[in-house]
Length: 205
Image 1 (cartoon, rainbow, N blue to C red):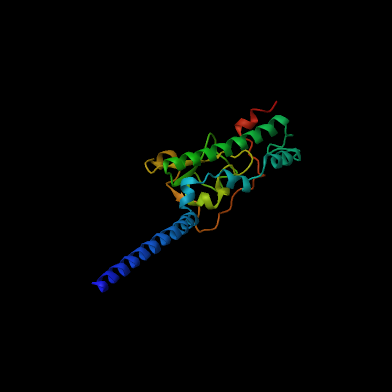
Image 2 (tube, rainbow, N blue to C red):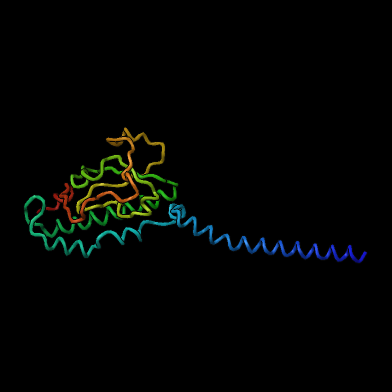
């Protein structure tokens, strides 16, 4: 009888120890799993805005204004007016804001792919580097925020979310082809290139 009671007590102790070990293991595994998700980029697709990343790889407004103030002629070989300089800066800021909002909204909708388009006019500075309809993944945007437009002054390239239902052959010149052929970022236009858009031309006095 005594032996049986001792056996039961020992068994209960072992069960309690096993339960405690199991609970401790779960607590240790949770942050490890979180780190793995973050490292894989999946966490970023759901939660990370490109706002911080893009600010680290694009020139600041001060840099752009300084560069423009040093230019005596524009692409049309005429002196830059102050209105044209301001319009180029305004277009740059507007395009960055729009690109960030497109990706942030895409994250809410679960968008995983985006393609490049030109609107409202073509962009001769971008076209040698990026064809209309080429696509990038949300993971590539997370790892390489420099692939988010604008790419240069007067850039008319923009990101369009692909929800998987659009018929791209109705809206782009190509079906979806990747911008990345390998893991390395492809060549992109120098931000100092200037495309004098119709919008910019309209500011000339």
